Length: 136
Length: 129
Image 1: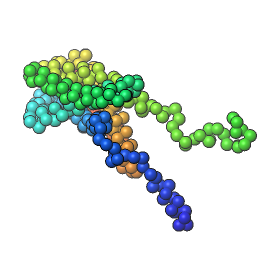
Image 2: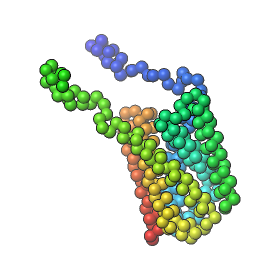
Image 3: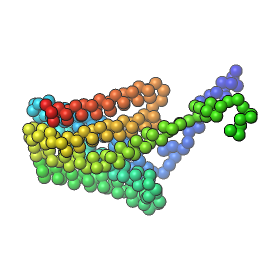
């Protein structure tokens, strides 16, 4: 009986493949994690879009409540974070598309792509932010 | 067919429950299809959002009542909600175990569906009411 149990537990407690802890930090690894985190952030951030659309569909008072929030310091911070997550995730998606197609997997290219995702995402966010303030 | 003389089990019964059949790559493929669709949709959405910044309530409603902005919002919300549901699904399948996984998958599907329908309802209400 004990032999059966020990055999059973050895089946349930399977060895795990090497995970995050044993690898040296790399930029491609960080961008992979960032892709997932920005995706999860956008998941919640879509509530902003839903709020905006529903408020606009109701009346001017509901619309004003939304614009008051989004123009406040916290609202601007949330919106900036949403914009950055959107552009970072967008560029990360393009990077994954290139990889799926078989391009950019070699040593210098994948590092360049990871850098382009990071810098491009921040640059696009700042550009759109500047355009937004100029238009406002 | 080579084993026909050695066993009475059919080939189907031998492969059942051993892994994905037919639908194994479906989620992976849908994730990529929605991702590609979201590239132009995101650009159009950001463009639209910027165009609304200098408008008041009536101006925003008038803009969102036009066909192209309304379609951009409908497609962005629908494709985006489906894409984010798939993404959160793979996060849940990676990290959640046991009963929590089932509840999380259920909540994820409900949240994405409710978000998509709320956005669609609001856009149609803005355009037609």
